[in-house]
Amino acid sequence: MQPESVLHQYSSFDAMISWKIICVEGKTFINGDFKNIRYAFMENVEVWVVLLDPAGKKVCRGSDFILPCRLDKNLVAEFSIELPAATLVGAKLVFTYKYDGSDGGDGMKWMQSFEASVT
Image (tube, rainbow, N blue to C red):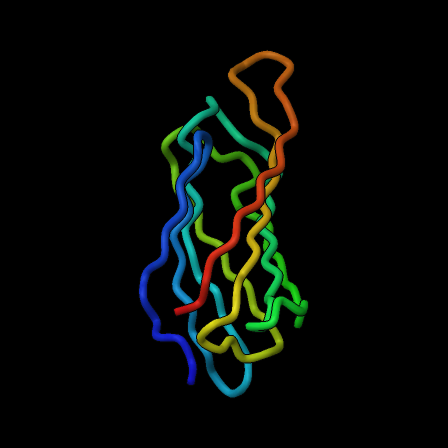
């Protein structure tokens, strides 16, 4: 059984992420939005996704770079990740995002991870 294409969301102190999972011909497409909710701007934003099967074993991974390279506060940018395997109900997606955030000073590098169950 494959997951339905429903909107999933995650929010932390720095970003809001929403995505849909679409399975087509043995591949999984994760199409989403990344919103900067903390810093005056973020640069070099990357989103990584690792697919874990229902037993927790790593199946594959994919990534995307957020464009434009600079994402000002409260702006949203799209990302799209293709995984070379179908995602089944009961699997997990491990998202990792990283960026350089700044409020006008030196800034900081940050990385955050979270898991999302596939329903």
